[in-house]
Length: 356
Image (cartoon, rainbow, N blue to C red):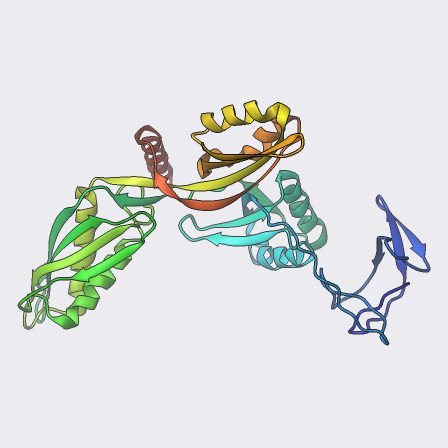
C-alpha cells in the first residue's frame, strides 16, 4: 500500500533501489524499502499516510554519534556554505551532530565512525559543491591551581586631568573538581567601595578565559577580594576591572597551576576472545577499568579514558579485533594531566603560537 504525506505533496514516481540503480515501481508494499523523489517538505522521521486515514508512526530512535572530527572549509568560498550545507545533511541523517567547542574555536562533526564522516563530507561536496576538510580535533584542556595564593595589583595611571586608580588584593583558593568558579568579597571598612566590587569580579571573569600555562580556560577556583584601596577622584569601574584581571593573573602564576584533561566514559562491546587485548590496550592508554558485563560470547568493558587517547580509537579498535568490536563514549569529568604529558602539551601550544 502506498502511503501519502499529511501535507499532500504530489508524488510522481516511486522506486525500488538496487545499489546505484533506481527501478520504477507502481507500489511499495509492507516491509519494502523504496524511494520517492521531489518531496520538498519532508524530512527524516516524517510519516507518509493516506489522506483519508491520517496516522503518525513512532519516530526512529537514532544512535548518538560518538566519533568526532574537526570540520573546516577548504577555501574562503566554502566558508559561508559550510553551515547551511551541513544543516541540510544533518536533517537527512539525525545520527550526525554539529557542535562548537568554544575553548578551541573548532566546529565539530560527530557520527558513527570515520567512514560515516568521510561519506558525509563527500555527499556535501556532490550535493552542494562545498569542499570540507576533516582533522583530528584539539583536546579542550582546562587549567586550575593546586595551592592557595595571594596577589596584589595597583592600577595607577596619570595623564593630565582625571587619572585611573584601582587597587585590589585577591586570595585564590583551589575549589572542588568540576565546581567551576566562585567569587567572594570579604572587604571591610570600605577599602574597596561597594560600587566597584562588581567591576573587580568582571575583570576576574574575563581573565578566566586564558590561563597562565597554555592559555586554556581556568576552572575550579575560588577568588576572594579581601582588601584594596581607592581614590576619590581617579577611581572608576574600569580601573578596578583592570586591577582585578591583572591580580588574578598574578595569583594564577603563584598558585602552582596545572592542566586538566577531559575523561571519557567508554563502553566497548567485544567478543570474549579479544577481551584480554582490549584490557591491555586500555591500560596502555592511561585508562581505568570500571567494570565488565559478560553476555553470550561477548563482554562489555566499561572504562574511563583520557580524550586525548581516544582521538584515533576507532581505527585502533578495528585493528585489534578485526572489526568485530564496537564502542560508544560520553564525557565524564576532568582530571589533572600527568606532569610529563602536561609539559608536552604546553610545549606544543607554545610552538604553535611561535609559528603563528
